[in-house]
Image 1 (tube, rainbow, N blue to C red):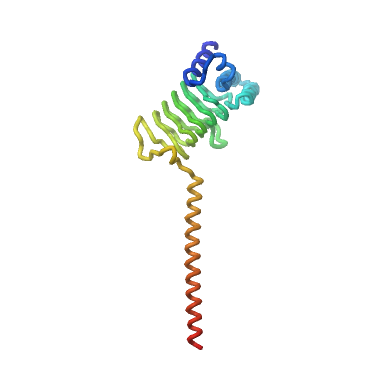
Image 2: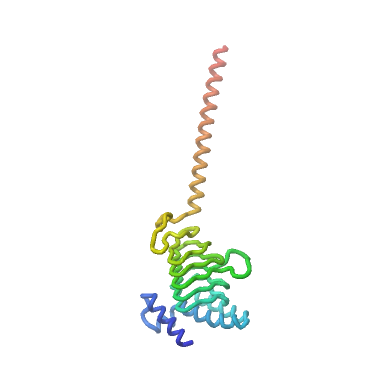
Length: 228
């Protein structure tokens, strides 16, 4: 147990340049506290002591801001940077040397039974605010961009960005649908743009109808004068 704890502390120093001392890491790193609490909760969960496991999980959530279901399986050297707002579901499986940033959700997509949360393979990185949802696989050495929503499997050695998430780099090669971070898909903006186009069409039609009506009135007035 102490060997694993020492490895966890070393992982913090390896991954976070802001870490200055072991004392500071032990007292102030919520991600470290959350993973230690999870190990205890997971051990109780495997022994079918579900209530105690959930109690430990919820107490840890209260103090760290990180919610890890006791049923989740997490590998070695798992690092949560800052950690606040991270949610990891019951059937989630995480490999070794995985890095997860604040606000990440590894969740399900509904009320389905069985395996309903993602599997994250070794050396993956999931950036701030990303949502990885459903029984999908994130391959080894893959990176999920900040704010992305991933609903499909991601091959190994890939980079994913956008809503919904799409692979933009694979095995070091950029794919054709590559996007800059400033050009990430924005469904709300797309809807607003579509509404603006429709409003413009309606305004043009209204102007045309008014012009036609004014023309018809003039012609009718001229016709009446000519009859007089």
